[in-house]
Length: 93
Image (tube, rainbow, N blue to C red):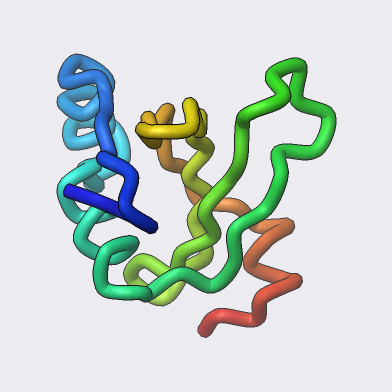
């Protein structure tokens, strides 16, 4: 799976945790990214990691944030979580 020519990867244990705890998977997130269903791409504010960004997505009528690392040739998804603050900003209903 790719975004802007970069391969998208993730940790399979984290993916299983997301399925069990948040009813979402990186496969679904990746399909949304690949099909252009991105509300925004942000630099991670306050991040200690200079190459970390955040995809903003609308999932099941709510705004989710998906932090990722950009290594230059690969995007590694870190986690996915619903965000009340982002939902207010992006107005996804």
